[in-house]
Amino acid sequence: MANNVVLKLFVPMLLLFAGVFSDVTFHFENICSHSIWRASNPSIGDLEPELGPEIYEIFNMDDHYSGSIWARTECTTNTDDYFSCETGDCRLGTRECADTTPNYPVTLLNFNVNESIVSYEISLIHGQNIFVNIKPVGGTLLDGSGPCPVVTCNMDFGNVCPPSLIAYNANGLYVGCNSACDVFKDDEHCCNGNNCQLDEYTLKFKQQCPNAHIYSGDNKPPMYQCKGAESYDITFCPAIGSAT
Ligand SMILES: *[C@@H]1O[C@H](CO)[C@@H](O)[C@H](O)[C@H]1NC(C)=O
Image 1 (tube, rainbow, N blue to C red):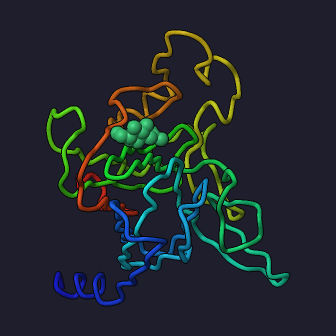
Image 2 (image 1 turned 45 degrees about the horizontal axis):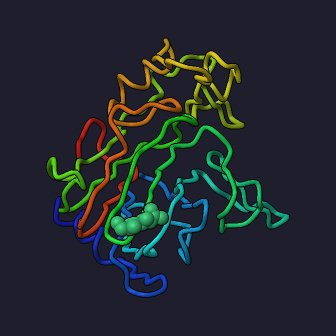
């Protein structure tokens, strides 16, 4: 059984090389039971959006990048050839999506790549539509304080999402949890002002995913800066509660 999984993960491996060979490699892995369609703002380069279940893919990043990657879910093309997704949709009607902001809720993977130095975080500022891990392989924190930590948000918010924040699909099923800021759109929930604190909503997110960034200005933990990692493994739908 375990061998099968490994084979399925590694045999259909696609190798994509974007531009010149770079210092920084992302390993995308989808262990969801469904496809996801990746999108980025700004574009991370030439990448087939769809990543099927149990597919593992290696992607060379440009030497300089600063932006967000996310996963769209439950995407379909309608009879007018318009492509859309239940979550993370780009409102472009195309499979490819870059250089635009997604519909919320969406789990954002934020990166800042400067040659071999990479800052990375999972942001729930615009809610959660999928659970993910970012795991640097090797490397050390730029400040020398230790190895580069895994950041993870591998809890499904379906059970804890306050009813007022739930995003439903057309069939009335839970598809994600919005941030209170995106729903209430007021200074209090958007943390506009000094001394932002966790509130009843952000606290719930924080309890589920303590090392994700929950509200604008959340600096616990800081955005890690990692140098010299062999790769950054980005896993969609990691086992609930696992750290890898
Ligand atoms: C990238 O890193 C170099 C050397 O550490 C630094 O001089 C430069 O300002 C950085 N570039 C950006 C865009 O942060």
